[in-house]
Image (tube, rainbow, N blue to C red; front, side):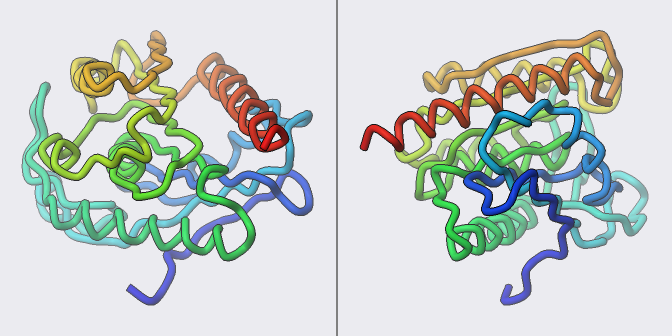
Length: 232
């Protein structure tokens, strides 16, 4: 675990004050969400470093053992559940924690880091953020689910017990069902974690309206944290 995941990095301004670590979905790579950055409308925000890591290629059981970029193995799929490799989830969590630590070393406090992800990447964003020992700025969870609820129940930290979450899902999603997304939302709300929940008339994808909402949420999050930091 000494080597950091390879990643694409984009800075919206010199000397960024915030970082967003954004995980792609199953079978994709870090390039997937690079085109989103200029569409977020962050021109008035402090500088942001976007980090798009590439997941390692592993055999994925539910896809016939085909080797593809994946954050963890999925043994079987169901409309309201997933049978997943929990050890693989823990391993990916450690890899994302290493990226968080590198941002700390580059001068970005954990409280200025957002974890984001789509589909399987969103599952890692949820798991890593909710169990992280230090408070993060927020979670962006797109067309995703909580892959190991028992892990979160056992290892959730008080530092992120009230972490703000932007969660969105397509009503026509036939890959990760809307019900799975709703279950994740309900899991968070039952623990009084503040969730901004959106649905869009789309399949397993993103849309322009959703990207605009993510940008507005990021702008508001960065402004709130900047104001809180200035008051200390």
